[in-house]
Length: 350
Image 1 (cartoon, rainbow, N blue to C red):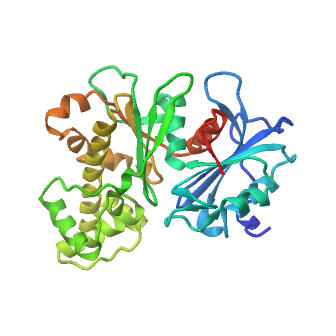
Image 2 (tube, rainbow, N blue to C red; image 1 turned 180 degrees about the vertical axis):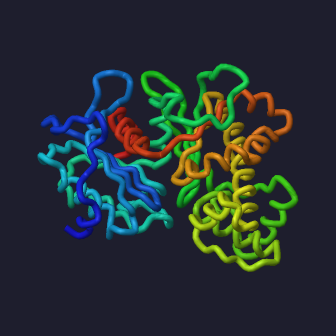
Protein backbone atom coordinates (compact mmCIF):
# COMPACT_ATOMS: atom_id res chain seq x y z
CA UNK A 1 0.00 0.00 0.00
CA UNK A 2 1.31 3.46 -0.90
CA UNK A 3 2.93 5.15 2.08
CA UNK A 4 3.02 1.96 4.18
CA UNK A 5 6.80 2.18 4.65
CA UNK A 6 6.36 5.44 6.54
CA UNK A 7 4.71 3.80 9.56
CA UNK A 8 6.05 0.49 10.81
CA UNK A 9 2.99 -0.39 12.85
CA UNK A 10 -0.07 1.18 14.36
CA UNK A 11 0.57 2.29 17.90
CA UNK A 12 -1.03 0.51 20.83
CA UNK A 13 -1.75 3.06 23.60
CA UNK A 14 -0.66 2.25 27.11
CA UNK A 15 -3.31 0.27 29.02
CA UNK A 16 -5.21 -0.59 25.82
CA UNK A 17 -6.09 -4.28 25.30
CA UNK A 18 -3.47 -6.23 23.38
CA UNK A 19 -6.19 -8.05 21.44
CA UNK A 20 -9.03 -6.18 19.78
CA UNK A 21 -12.58 -6.97 20.88
CA UNK A 22 -14.88 -8.38 18.23
CA UNK A 23 -17.73 -5.98 19.01
CA UNK A 24 -18.45 -3.23 16.44
CA UNK A 25 -15.87 -0.46 16.83
CA UNK A 26 -15.60 3.17 15.78
CA UNK A 27 -12.83 4.68 13.64
CA UNK A 28 -12.14 8.32 14.54
CA UNK A 29 -9.81 10.75 12.76
CA UNK A 30 -8.70 14.22 13.85
CA UNK A 31 -7.33 15.98 10.76
CA UNK A 32 -5.40 19.23 10.78
CA UNK A 33 -3.23 20.96 8.24
CA UNK A 34 -0.05 19.22 9.43
CA UNK A 35 -1.09 15.98 11.14
CA UNK A 36 -3.88 13.43 10.94
CA UNK A 37 -4.48 11.59 14.20
CA UNK A 38 -6.39 8.33 13.84
CA UNK A 39 -7.79 6.09 16.55
CA UNK A 40 -9.80 2.90 16.84
CA UNK A 41 -12.13 3.22 19.80
CA UNK A 42 -14.78 1.27 21.68
CA UNK A 43 -17.56 2.62 23.89
CA UNK A 44 -16.96 2.66 27.63
CA UNK A 45 -19.69 1.74 30.11
CA UNK A 46 -18.59 4.25 32.77
CA UNK A 47 -18.78 8.02 32.74
CA UNK A 48 -15.05 8.80 32.95
CA UNK A 49 -14.77 9.05 29.17
CA UNK A 50 -17.11 8.04 26.37
CA UNK A 51 -14.56 5.76 24.73
CA UNK A 52 -11.48 3.62 25.16
CA UNK A 53 -8.74 4.23 22.59
CA UNK A 54 -7.63 0.77 21.43
CA UNK A 55 -5.16 1.82 18.72
CA UNK A 56 -3.78 5.24 17.83
CA UNK A 57 -1.41 6.68 15.23
CA UNK A 58 -0.34 10.16 14.15
CA UNK A 59 0.38 10.69 10.45
CA UNK A 60 2.17 13.58 8.71
CA UNK A 61 -0.34 14.72 6.11
CA UNK A 62 2.21 15.86 3.53
CA UNK A 63 3.59 12.30 3.31
CA UNK A 64 0.28 10.83 2.15
CA UNK A 65 -1.71 11.27 -1.07
CA UNK A 66 -5.11 11.53 0.61
CA UNK A 67 -7.01 11.09 3.85
CA UNK A 68 -8.54 7.92 2.41
CA UNK A 69 -5.01 6.49 2.02
CA UNK A 70 -4.21 7.33 5.65
CA UNK A 71 -7.34 5.61 6.93
CA UNK A 72 -6.80 2.58 4.67
CA UNK A 73 -3.28 2.19 6.03
CA UNK A 74 -4.46 2.42 9.62
CA UNK A 75 -7.16 -0.21 9.10
CA UNK A 76 -4.80 -2.51 7.19
CA UNK A 77 -2.42 -2.70 10.16
CA UNK A 78 -5.08 -3.74 12.68
CA UNK A 79 -4.38 -7.21 14.01
CA UNK A 80 -6.70 -8.99 14.00
CA UNK A 81 -8.98 -7.16 11.53
CA UNK A 82 -11.63 -5.22 13.44
CA UNK A 83 -15.36 -4.88 12.72
CA UNK A 84 -15.70 -1.12 12.17
CA UNK A 85 -19.26 0.09 12.62
CA UNK A 86 -18.78 3.79 11.98
CA UNK A 87 -16.17 6.38 11.03
CA UNK A 88 -16.12 9.99 12.20
CA UNK A 89 -13.77 12.61 10.76
CA UNK A 90 -13.01 15.80 12.69
CA UNK A 91 -11.35 18.21 10.29
CA UNK A 92 -10.41 21.82 9.98
CA UNK A 93 -12.69 23.54 7.48
CA UNK A 94 -16.31 23.00 6.52
CA UNK A 95 -18.35 20.58 4.41
CA UNK A 96 -19.49 21.66 0.94
CA UNK A 97 -21.32 18.99 -1.04
CA UNK A 98 -18.91 16.00 -1.14
CA UNK A 99 -15.80 17.84 0.04
CA UNK A 100 -14.24 19.16 3.23
CA UNK A 101 -13.09 22.64 2.25
CA UNK A 102 -9.99 24.15 3.83
CA UNK A 103 -7.01 25.70 2.07
CA UNK A 104 -4.75 24.66 4.98
CA UNK A 105 -5.26 20.92 4.38
CA UNK A 106 -2.60 19.01 2.48
CA UNK A 107 -5.15 17.63 0.02
CA UNK A 108 -8.78 17.86 -1.02
CA UNK A 109 -10.89 15.56 1.12
CA UNK A 110 -13.64 13.62 -0.65
CA UNK A 111 -16.27 12.23 1.72
CA UNK A 112 -17.49 9.66 -0.81
CA UNK A 113 -13.92 8.45 -1.45
CA UNK A 114 -13.46 7.73 2.26
CA UNK A 115 -16.82 5.97 2.52
CA UNK A 116 -16.21 3.84 -0.58
CA UNK A 117 -12.57 2.98 0.15
CA UNK A 118 -13.44 1.63 3.61
CA UNK A 119 -16.86 0.22 2.64
CA UNK A 120 -18.51 2.25 5.40
CA UNK A 121 -22.21 2.39 6.06
CA UNK A 122 -21.92 5.33 8.46
CA UNK A 123 -19.53 8.27 8.08
CA UNK A 124 -19.86 11.52 10.03
CA UNK A 125 -17.93 14.79 9.69
CA UNK A 126 -17.36 17.60 12.19
CA UNK A 127 -14.96 20.47 12.92
CA UNK A 128 -11.63 19.54 14.51
CA UNK A 129 -11.84 22.08 17.34
CA UNK A 130 -15.42 21.01 17.96
CA UNK A 131 -13.97 17.59 18.80
CA UNK A 132 -11.24 19.00 21.04
CA UNK A 133 -13.81 21.11 22.89
CA UNK A 134 -15.97 18.03 23.56
CA UNK A 135 -12.94 16.19 24.97
CA UNK A 136 -12.28 18.91 27.57
CA UNK A 137 -15.09 17.39 29.67
CA UNK A 138 -12.80 14.45 30.41
CA UNK A 139 -9.59 16.36 31.21
CA UNK A 140 -8.12 16.57 34.68
CA UNK A 141 -5.84 19.34 35.92
CA UNK A 142 -2.97 16.86 35.60
CA UNK A 143 -3.56 16.78 31.83
CA UNK A 144 -2.97 20.52 31.47
CA UNK A 145 -0.64 23.36 32.49
CA UNK A 146 -2.05 26.46 34.23
CA UNK A 147 -1.41 29.68 32.33
CA UNK A 148 -3.70 31.87 34.46
CA UNK A 149 -5.09 30.71 37.79
CA UNK A 150 -8.61 32.00 38.48
CA UNK A 151 -9.24 34.27 41.44
CA UNK A 152 -12.31 32.20 42.39
CA UNK A 153 -13.27 28.50 42.23
CA UNK A 154 -14.03 27.29 38.72
CA UNK A 155 -17.68 27.74 37.79
CA UNK A 156 -19.96 25.85 35.48
CA UNK A 157 -20.46 27.65 32.22
CA UNK A 158 -19.29 27.80 28.61
CA UNK A 159 -15.78 26.48 28.00
CA UNK A 160 -13.68 28.07 25.26
CA UNK A 161 -11.04 26.13 23.35
CA UNK A 162 -8.75 27.88 20.87
CA UNK A 163 -5.37 27.34 19.39
CA UNK A 164 -3.00 28.13 16.55
CA UNK A 165 -1.72 25.43 14.23
CA UNK A 166 -1.73 25.46 10.46
CA UNK A 167 -4.76 27.71 10.99
CA UNK A 168 -6.44 29.25 14.04
CA UNK A 169 -9.24 27.13 15.50
CA UNK A 170 -11.83 27.88 18.18
CA UNK A 171 -14.91 26.18 19.59
CA UNK A 172 -17.16 26.53 22.63
CA UNK A 173 -18.56 23.78 24.88
CA UNK A 174 -21.99 24.66 26.28
CA UNK A 175 -23.00 22.60 29.33
CA UNK A 176 -26.37 20.89 29.11
CA UNK A 177 -28.48 17.83 29.91
CA UNK A 178 -28.26 14.99 28.96
CA UNK A 179 -25.27 16.09 26.89
CA UNK A 180 -23.27 19.23 26.41
CA UNK A 181 -23.45 21.03 23.07
CA UNK A 182 -20.46 22.23 21.10
CA UNK A 183 -20.53 25.38 19.01
CA UNK A 184 -18.04 25.26 16.15
CA UNK A 185 -16.77 28.70 15.12
CA UNK A 186 -14.68 30.41 12.48
CA UNK A 187 -13.44 32.91 15.06
CA UNK A 188 -9.95 32.82 13.56
CA UNK A 189 -11.32 34.85 10.65
CA UNK A 190 -12.28 37.79 12.90
CA UNK A 191 -10.53 41.00 11.86
CA UNK A 192 -7.23 41.60 13.65
CA UNK A 193 -7.52 44.25 16.38
CA UNK A 194 -4.16 45.80 17.36
CA UNK A 195 -3.66 46.58 21.04
CA UNK A 196 -0.64 48.89 20.96
CA UNK A 197 1.37 51.12 18.63
CA UNK A 198 3.64 48.32 17.38
CA UNK A 199 0.65 46.20 16.44
CA UNK A 200 -0.95 49.15 14.68
CA UNK A 201 2.21 49.50 12.61
CA UNK A 202 2.02 45.79 11.80
CA UNK A 203 -1.61 45.97 10.76
CA UNK A 204 -0.90 48.97 8.54
CA UNK A 205 1.92 47.07 6.85
CA UNK A 206 -0.02 43.82 6.44
CA UNK A 207 -3.03 45.67 5.03
CA UNK A 208 -0.89 46.86 2.12
CA UNK A 209 -0.51 43.25 0.95
CA UNK A 210 -4.06 41.92 1.43
CA UNK A 211 -7.62 43.17 1.42
CA UNK A 212 -8.45 41.62 4.80
CA UNK A 213 -6.25 40.86 7.81
CA UNK A 214 -7.69 38.25 10.18
CA UNK A 215 -6.31 36.98 13.47
CA UNK A 216 -5.38 33.76 11.65
CA UNK A 217 -3.09 35.84 9.41
CA UNK A 218 -0.72 36.17 12.37
CA UNK A 219 -1.87 33.62 15.00
CA UNK A 220 -0.94 30.39 13.23
CA UNK A 221 2.16 28.54 12.06
CA UNK A 222 2.20 30.40 8.73
CA UNK A 223 1.27 33.51 10.72
CA UNK A 224 4.55 33.31 12.63
CA UNK A 225 6.35 33.62 9.30
CA UNK A 226 4.11 36.54 8.30
CA UNK A 227 4.76 38.29 11.61
CA UNK A 228 8.50 37.72 11.39
CA UNK A 229 8.79 39.11 7.87
CA UNK A 230 6.66 42.14 8.73
CA UNK A 231 8.70 42.87 11.85
CA UNK A 232 11.92 42.56 9.87
CA UNK A 233 10.53 45.20 7.51
CA UNK A 234 9.66 47.48 10.41
CA UNK A 235 13.12 46.87 11.92
CA UNK A 236 14.70 47.69 8.54
CA UNK A 237 16.46 44.31 8.43
CA UNK A 238 16.41 41.39 6.03
CA UNK A 239 14.61 38.20 7.15
CA UNK A 240 17.04 35.29 7.52
CA UNK A 241 14.58 32.68 8.84
CA UNK A 242 11.94 31.16 6.61
CA UNK A 243 10.14 28.39 8.54
CA UNK A 244 7.98 28.67 11.68
CA UNK A 245 10.09 26.06 13.48
CA UNK A 246 13.25 28.05 12.81
CA UNK A 247 11.63 31.27 14.02
CA UNK A 248 10.41 29.55 17.20
CA UNK A 249 13.84 28.01 17.87
CA UNK A 250 15.58 31.34 17.34
CA UNK A 251 13.17 33.02 19.77
CA UNK A 252 13.67 30.34 22.42
CA UNK A 253 17.47 30.58 22.10
CA UNK A 254 17.49 34.39 21.74
CA UNK A 255 19.62 34.04 18.61
CA UNK A 256 17.58 36.41 16.43
CA UNK A 257 16.15 39.69 17.72
CA UNK A 258 13.33 39.80 15.17
CA UNK A 259 12.30 36.25 16.11
CA UNK A 260 12.23 37.19 19.80
CA UNK A 261 9.96 40.15 19.01
CA UNK A 262 7.83 37.93 16.77
CA UNK A 263 6.98 35.55 19.61
CA UNK A 264 6.45 38.45 22.01
CA UNK A 265 3.90 40.02 19.65
CA UNK A 266 2.37 36.60 18.96
CA UNK A 267 1.74 35.85 22.64
CA UNK A 268 0.37 39.32 23.31
CA UNK A 269 -2.11 39.09 20.43
CA UNK A 270 -3.09 35.59 21.54
CA UNK A 271 -3.87 36.84 25.04
CA UNK A 272 -6.00 39.68 23.70
CA UNK A 273 -7.84 37.40 21.25
CA UNK A 274 -8.50 34.76 23.93
CA UNK A 275 -10.00 37.40 26.22
CA UNK A 276 -12.20 38.79 23.44
CA UNK A 277 -13.63 35.32 22.79
CA UNK A 278 -14.02 34.64 26.52
CA UNK A 279 -16.11 37.82 26.78
CA UNK A 280 -18.07 37.03 23.62
CA UNK A 281 -19.10 33.57 24.82
CA UNK A 282 -19.16 34.25 28.55
CA UNK A 283 -16.58 31.49 29.09
CA UNK A 284 -16.98 31.25 32.86
CA UNK A 285 -16.14 27.53 32.65
CA UNK A 286 -12.59 28.28 31.56
CA UNK A 287 -10.34 28.68 28.53
CA UNK A 288 -8.16 25.92 27.09
CA UNK A 289 -5.27 26.72 24.76
CA UNK A 290 -4.65 23.89 22.30
CA UNK A 291 -3.19 23.63 18.82
CA UNK A 292 -0.18 21.94 17.35
CA UNK A 293 2.78 23.99 18.59
CA UNK A 294 1.76 25.98 21.68
CA UNK A 295 3.03 23.27 24.09
CA UNK A 296 6.51 23.80 22.59
CA UNK A 297 6.26 27.45 23.64
CA UNK A 298 5.10 26.77 27.17
CA UNK A 299 7.87 28.55 29.07
CA UNK A 300 7.92 31.44 26.65
CA UNK A 301 4.11 31.74 26.82
CA UNK A 302 4.13 31.73 30.63
CA UNK A 303 6.74 34.50 30.71
CA UNK A 304 5.08 36.60 28.00
CA UNK A 305 2.52 39.41 27.96
CA UNK A 306 -0.30 36.89 27.46
CA UNK A 307 -1.63 37.34 30.99
CA UNK A 308 -1.45 41.15 30.94
CA UNK A 309 -3.19 41.32 27.57
CA UNK A 310 -5.85 38.82 28.65
CA UNK A 311 -6.81 41.07 31.57
CA UNK A 312 -6.50 44.33 29.62
CA UNK A 313 -10.21 44.64 28.82
CA UNK A 314 -11.21 47.69 30.84
CA UNK A 315 -14.21 47.23 33.13
CA UNK A 316 -14.38 43.52 32.29
CA UNK A 317 -11.13 42.66 34.07
CA UNK A 318 -12.90 41.39 37.24
CA UNK A 319 -14.90 38.93 35.12
CA UNK A 320 -11.81 37.72 33.29
CA UNK A 321 -9.89 37.27 36.55
CA UNK A 322 -12.38 34.54 37.48
CA UNK A 323 -11.65 32.51 34.32
CA UNK A 324 -8.88 29.87 34.47
CA UNK A 325 -6.71 29.54 31.37
CA UNK A 326 -4.91 26.23 30.85
CA UNK A 327 -2.60 24.84 28.18
CA UNK A 328 -3.41 21.37 26.85
CA UNK A 329 -1.53 18.93 24.63
CA UNK A 330 -3.52 18.14 21.51
CA UNK A 331 -2.57 14.44 21.51
CA UNK A 332 -5.47 12.01 21.38
CA UNK A 333 -8.07 14.51 22.59
CA UNK A 334 -9.39 15.25 19.10
CA UNK A 335 -9.90 11.53 18.47
CA UNK A 336 -11.66 11.08 21.83
CA UNK A 337 -13.84 14.12 21.25
CA UNK A 338 -14.78 13.10 17.70
CA UNK A 339 -15.78 9.64 18.87
CA UNK A 340 -17.70 11.05 21.83
CA UNK A 341 -19.65 13.46 19.65
CA UNK A 342 -20.53 10.67 17.23
CA UNK A 343 -21.74 8.43 20.05
CA UNK A 344 -23.80 11.29 21.47
CA UNK A 345 -25.39 11.81 18.04
CA UNK A 346 -23.95 15.29 17.48
CA UNK A 347 -21.80 14.51 14.41
CA UNK A 348 -23.23 15.43 11.01
CA UNK A 349 -23.61 12.45 8.61
CA UNK A 350 -21.36 12.80 5.59
